[in-house]
Image (cartoon, rainbow, N blue to C red; front, side, top):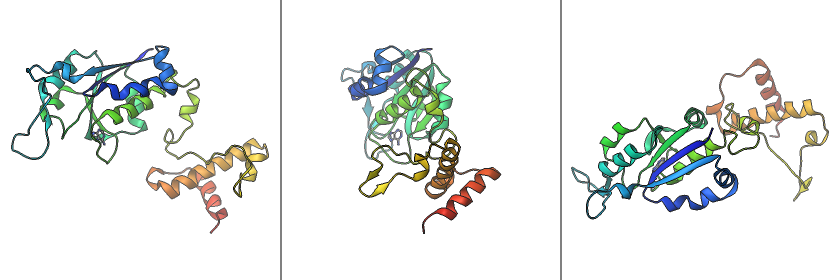
Length: 240
Ligand code: ADE
């Protein structure tokens, strides 16, 4: 399948190097993913081509007008329509998986103080990148495109590596090392040098549990008997 994204934005050029570089760039060049950008301003109908206006009721900032955004949504290809806004549901790996089931996604990016409320009736879903405020949805759209594109075969040669990573199973990734063996007095854990694959697997699992319990206890669900054991053991071995 060819994965298709249509991004509705007031700043299409923000995406230029994102779509040219690295693995996304290769997937785009090979036509494995298609990312179309639509300038919302093209759908402004007044002589000034205005896309924003002051808020009814007063207040600071400007609001995105409904007509250009809704017209851009109407003319976008068929697919799931997603509004990118700090008021949306929190975007997670789970959301990426859900959205990835749709071959075509239309991502609408806001700017200014937000969208006219009536625009919400014309989308299927609203997502936020996190509990912070950006100037607009474009950076969030890049994160969404990349997280979805890399789930499939279109971008990553081996989809297993996406599956094994942090968040796919709710745990953070284990510590990774490469050469040199000793860097500024810090050595690679001995267990990784021994070639005992079962012991390495066990150690890595324990490290993931340990790291998650320390850094992101909110991600740690009900543990199996074996995981509980591993975590206890790892906690016992930790340096004070
Ligand atoms: N637009 C502005 N801030 C945002 C955020 N945190 N997530 C998604 N879209 C946004």
